[in-house]
Image (tube, rainbow, N blue to C red; front, side, top):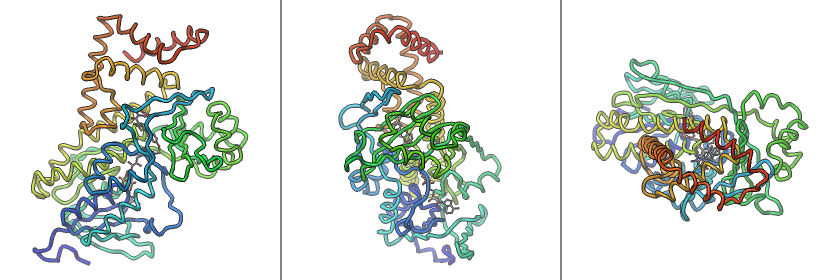
Length: 470
Ligand code: FAD
Ligand code: EGU
């Protein structure tokens, strides 16, 4: 099929490469504008497939992602199948659980099922008569000069297709992006972090959630960390983050139990001894990569969005949210420049690169901070300090995660403001010791400490305050 030969009266053809979360959503955005949309996806139709393999079973959906869904009329449908998480639940090594709300009532994030979200978006894209989904189409190569794309199918056959615009939504290992790297003045960097992740399922107990459902459960243990998000079937998906070296050190079922006994003992009866011994070895730990590039476009022919443009480490829960926001930003620029690709594409790069790079940096920063010194005491302490400062100066100090998670403040502006707030806080610390006294009292009222345990931890905390301020 030769799509560009369909004559001048036809609406332009947009090829969306990748039918993952961002590709499927983008198909809706372009279809809504009336383009002829062709989606090309390597995998078979996941709505028909029996087992859907792939990473991360559920995801945290927040404001930016929701706004994008709203643009295509999908917000209500998706949130009705998500589980609200109003707070984090911090699990200490002793098994003590402490909730920390995300914000005021009504400020919550949602745990959504990746496969279900992807299926719903594909089905929505298909409701537009001007959209066609092509599964079992793996992009092998394309030409930046002619825009000709070559797809291979599982039977070995090939398809060659042209489009007016190619939208690369083919994920962190994007085949579309490969052509960008061969061009002059294209920047690219990729970093694998030393940590891997492994997903474990916590089944329901007597037909009910094994832990409180409306929380993002966190076990912060410096270099090790576990996170659990609830699913509609009353299971939790627990994600264990740990350096690959440590994953490899554990080689027997007994060693798994020993390790969990030491760091996550409260979860052993909930996941189940036998399940734990078995599931730990079912799949190897998976890698996490951070990718940055710029520009995001080639001429008026091709543009990258989602992980293809910016894979971020998951330590801010923003990868999908940022990719969904890419779609809104592109849509806004399309309005501004009357769908003239030769103007829209450079402008999209200009406005979006600084923001995507900012969230990539923030996620990496949080990864480094968490593994360096975030145990459960520190996590609780930091969040209470942030909340207290916000409580003291609600207009001046807004926690970073609030700007990132609950607003559409441009990511790079959120970072700028965060640095500025830090300066204000430092000045406050310098000129008034009362702040510290008030902060201390606030913490004491919120968490009456065990006096016997207070003396040494207080000193440790102070060392960390010093470390943080330098
Ligand atoms: P993908 O989801 O990777 O989709 C790419 C699609 O392109 C796939 O369907 C693939 O089959 C297809 N494809 C690939 N190559 C080709 C080709 N050559 N030809 C045709 N098709 C191709 N984000 C959040 O917002 N919140 C979270 O809580 C969160 N948690 C995460 C936890 C973990 C452990 C990880 C690893 C990530 C997490 N993320 C989270 C990030 C999120 O998963 C990604 O940002 C998101 O999936 C990106 O979507 P995408 O459509 O750009 O890429
Ligand atoms: C990691 C893996 C807590 C899902 C960052 C918070 C994440 C998620 C946090 C994963 C953390 C870390 C934030 C949200 C969210 C917190 C956030 C991280 C969802 C700063 C499925 N992170 N995640 N920050 O504040 O803003 O609760 O796999 F442990 S949601 Cl690492 Cl808000």
